[in-house]
Image (tube, rainbow, N blue to C red; front, side):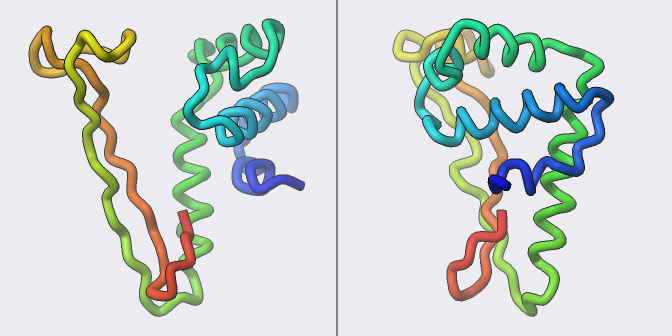
Length: 128
């Protein structure tokens, strides 16, 4: 079982096919984190399935974050000290250098607001 399947196996959105599709999508994107969705997906059918999943309001993708947060908490158990560090909270680039990322505070500023956090032990074991 892949790490993605272990991490997201608790996601309980309706159909089993939806869970398989999500796991496949995360595996594809984690294997090629800098690739576009079509490139990472590896084919038109896979890309279309990924877009359908991401566009499905009933998919409960907010629950995916909840599952990941819960699993991170479980990994933290048994470690007396854990560090949580934000990693570059916002990515901002001139609009001319970014392809459709989104407008931020004004038209010439494009990027996305992120608040990623890395959780690790003092020995450097990443828990999230």
